[in-house]
Image 1: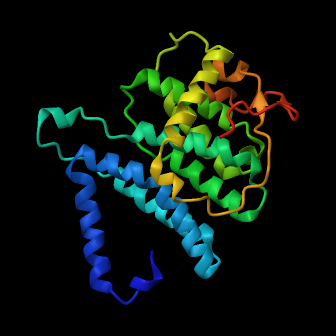
Image 2: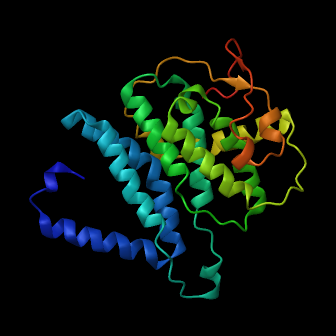
Length: 250
């Protein structure tokens, strides 16, 4: 993806083989790729935007490449590695926080393209359906993300999150108690802490200017009530309070 390597065909060929082998060798390498995902996507947008004026292309291309690596099947060498955590769900929570933090303030072309790429990524990361409780928590957050105006206005981004809602909804039986507003606040707070503690992100600013905004605060009725997303995700909208305070400012 770096224009400076266009003449180094052998290097590019070697790297393409290396990364596939790296991703498929063990779960720990998946965790490394997950940790590098957001910083790399941010830097790719910055680099391409500064050199060619095509930040969208850099963000989308690098995101797709990293997601292809995460979809590589792992070849376990031991029984422990067969159940070892890959870090995929952690990445999905970080992407959810990234979207919640920047999507409401993205009104220019570059910002909207970045949000669309992250929605595509969030809906593409493979996740372990056996982690039922975490899948339920992520489902709750994704329902709220899908109601952010910037995402609702983008047909492709909205569809990506709807497909993810259906996949997450199918992983857990309807035995969880509806999530209270306090529990939902704690869930967002914990996810924000995980995102903000990512040291690599501090050296990788967003690839566009984020306008001042107030995070849209909605009632938690939709997020905490069971519904089949394949039949009702578009039938209920939560009210938006324009003068609400942002409880999760960095």
